[in-house]
Length: 218
Length: 218
DNA sequence: CTTGACACGGTAATAATTATCAACTACTTT
DNA sequence: AAAGTAGTTGATAATTATTACCGTGTCAAG
Image (tube, each protein chain N blue to C red):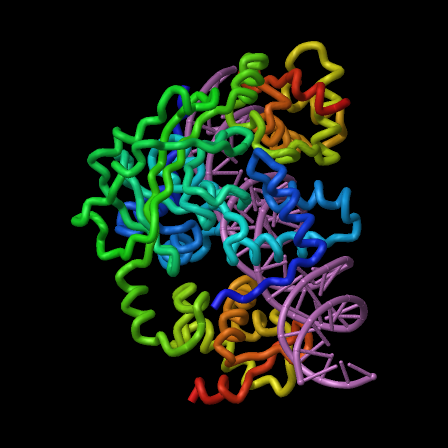
């Protein structure tokens, strides 16, 4: 029934790379690592083979809440804990998992195929990091993604540079004057910059650049 | 700390629509329903407000394995079971959930914020459906989504009719223009139609109706 | 040595979501 | 009430992660 699968060089290298990882790498992470050994490999090949290998039971595909899929060489039953900030995933071993059985009257007619228990929280690294810079409230922005909206548009950069020059907080009119942008555009961009945590508003309607904002400029 | 949020008409309607649903609708599903009441609303507004409302605790955002996010008006702690075929999500109530505590020696340094228990299986509708047509090999396609069936949705019929009128293959943009559907919807539906064999693609990115497709129209 | 199934790399397409932005509306201050 | 600021909206572009497509290449069986 199970089709024999050809063990190509690419597949060997992919499998090898997964077996080496203690974390649960994403397709993308694996691709980056594998490229060093097989510079000509295609991202599509990595995805394709991860899918094929997980279907044929050589590896496990993890579906952790709402993010990229991750792959695991450990085929034994175990559960996971993940970091809501950096999204790393670690293994956990739940001894009393069998207690979490679905009462028969609760299955709503489903043919139950399995159960996943997922813990979530903040990993050691992230809690260390957030202690360092707990001054900025930036809960969401903490490490939402590698480049998630960190990039500045031309207008935003212009505004930030203008703000960097001012010693104290200034109103959007001042900024508009300093940047040759229209006032309307300024207030719109200020909002965006505030969301990114690069600008804050110490007084109503006055804005100043934050530490992060200065960092973003350099 | 929590900013008061302005209850606009759009937000009212969105909230209202969620409260009405017994299922756990996706942003897209909500958009489709809301459009009937507010034809001018933008999909972005729906996404934006779902995010804002879940952040401010008016609704709950569900992160079920590897698919679209879903939204829930029920703020009480409860868990879910989902169908691995049609991806519907139902509530379950786990009395003995507290037994699934993470042993202190297992937390791997995480500050644990919570735990999610997810059951999965095949929902009553899907198991009924797969019994009926177990002849067809189609393992994956069995009932991948509502458009897995032989029935034509309104949109699909519209697209097929448009294609029937064209002599030669045309791109999805042309179809979108001819049908007054949004291009996104068109390409999604085209894919479904291709899988059903009612449409094929003689040239990359160009589509034409097949014999079966013509039959399906009559 | 042909044949055909499978696999590869490159790239376009897709799906879901998020970002940007100009126009607008609702609040606050005067 | 006027003026200005903050927050919202619709339209659309962009992004992220993944999958589909396609022409070419490889390998093993007949």
